[in-house]
Length: 489
Image (cartoon, rainbow, N blue to C red; front, side, top):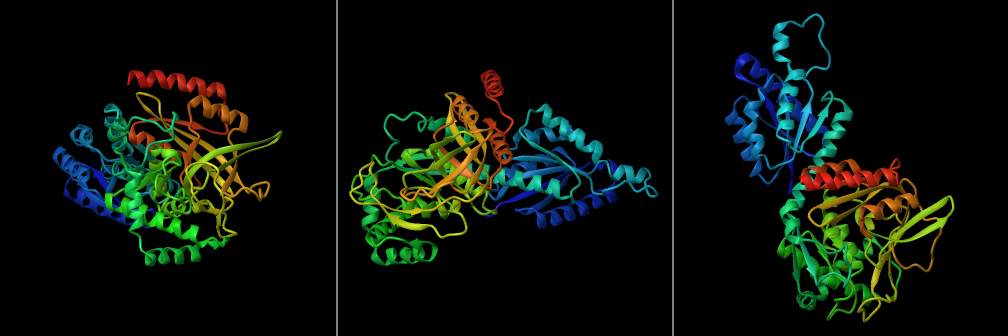
């Protein structure tokens, strides 16, 4: 889907036709110039002057799949009672851009005609009141429209809004159930579909095996050629790699047929399969699909959503798991990995990921699975966990700084990422556990905590952010107040 955003400008008939023509011409100019700076087109739609015009454009936006949200601005004074019906019906993300066409007050030219035309300073305040009165989820961004800072904020909001559009259309394919006795990978699928739009359903592993058996040698050869060009083959066991290609082709075919953007499986249910999909899952994630291990359908969907939100960057969002800690005093790190399935979009740029085969001493593997092995890239990032708190969903986000692994770990045959957690490892772990964060996360170098906060706000779910300034005491107070607020809600 090629998404765009609609620019809806507020005015009224009070100022005459010439003013309205000027407002329209300026709005079109602003939309065109902003589109050159933003990650998605901003399309001027209407200078709205009546209740009906506003209601009609909202109805049109609601039913246009390519429209990922609307951005409003009031060039003149736009009485906000005429916005009530439209805003009450709005089902798309909404950003109020408080700006004005001219940067400066023209000392020699300013007169009452100028003042009548350029009334954004109080037009936007009238417009902002009604959204506050309606308790609408919205993003308010103020600043001059040609400046980089507000443009960057609009761009970030757009990406979060695209995450909403992807979420509303999300379908997750589950092969089998989640890992036995695990609590955090459970969740209310009906509530999630009601709140987030996700359709989460199960397909039999036997159906996947049947599809795998139908994959041709030619199709496997084609994928092998792709593997050879993108990765370093560091094993002589090419049959294991070919088997992963067979799995990948079959999983992709089944997902595409059903319109699924994410999938989950578990090492406890591989009936009829020789290997847990490792390389297969990794290469599918590299193409933008979401994945969750041990049947974790929530992290699978969030991976796909965050990949879509970061699509115009380097695509570096991936399924992740906190595996072990380095607790040397003053030199504390988390080591993230998984049995096999970490997306190569996280790989450092200095080396190609290597395809290796090794024994996997867990699950129902008949043969050694092939997987990509690499070190993660350095840089600021976040880890995100969506958990079902019973009655509501909570999105937990923690700031981290990824580093080059401080040791080579030559006998660890999986992809790995090492990071410093904020505010520090001990307090960060205490905060994460206090908030109920899962052991599975989405790690992203592209998507920011602010974007995830915007996304959570648009989806009307709880957001918890662990930063360099968070303390365990402050977080406990925040969670207590959140519990009260959400119970009242």
